[in-house]
Length: 400
Image 1 (tube, rainbow, N blue to C red):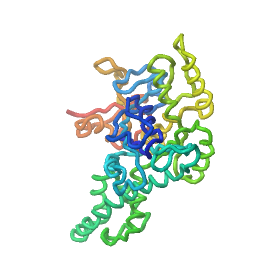
Image 2 (image 1 turned 60 degrees about the vertical axis):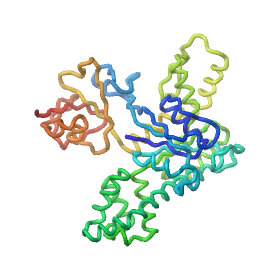
Image 3 (image 1 turned 135 degrees about the horizontal axis):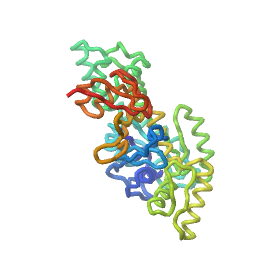
């Protein structure tokens, strides 16, 4: 799974990335600080970990588990800030839109305080309408895709006419390779615009744009990170944005606060669990400056919003928007691998995952030679088409 982090320059996008990954990505108060995309690992929460039901303490090989909350790694990519005209190459736009091509979903970081203009330059607080950020970025992505589709669809439509192929068949092959789109998503986009039985080369520009908008919505869902929520006036802007975009998931956040808390936790100043509404100071001597900063975060962020929002955004994107589930490999004779790790692995699996899909995820040979699966918690035997659910612990039995 790959999650793309996008937005205009200077909205705290790279700070958001750093808060998720604790990587020292370059961040500065001017446009286009990020030239090459930053790649890192974030972690989604599975709360509670399956070890609670199995009455053990897990020891992950990847990620970590704290207080029986499992943190599972997810790939992240942070690209350069996008400005109006990016789809036409302005501001290095085409290069970085291409970097997002294989992302499963996108997080758009916006400056909800309205203190940066459309170019990412600092302006007086509240003097820019943050709803414009959402509108122009959606437009740029869709115009970029529209340009790619228009350039290629005439050729695809000609092939379709010669080979007498169905529109769904032709587009499934092309869009799976370019966008990673699923056949079901393409089918919905075609039916939504009455294009299912129309040859691709006969589509009007308006039909192509409508298809583009729908396939983007399905193949590249976006969640909005309303950053700088602690700045005065931001809450009013947030409420207005949520009313204007009722179909978008918009979550308030303070990337700077999350970055500060994770840094303090790493340096053993506090004990902090990402996504929590509190922390505990564990260092005996804390400077007045550190104490004031921590008090500010507790009173103005955690007490008001319940968390910094950063962890919530990633969790909701993976589990609510993409609807992924957590599945653990295990064994009825034990949950420990040869290195002594208890429940060492946890896999994020897409909705609709069956036992056979999980077998292939573990190893191609397990899928090819699948005999049966066993639910470790109930000891029930499962067939290859048995649908899996979140927090399943599954043993795969295969032949040689």
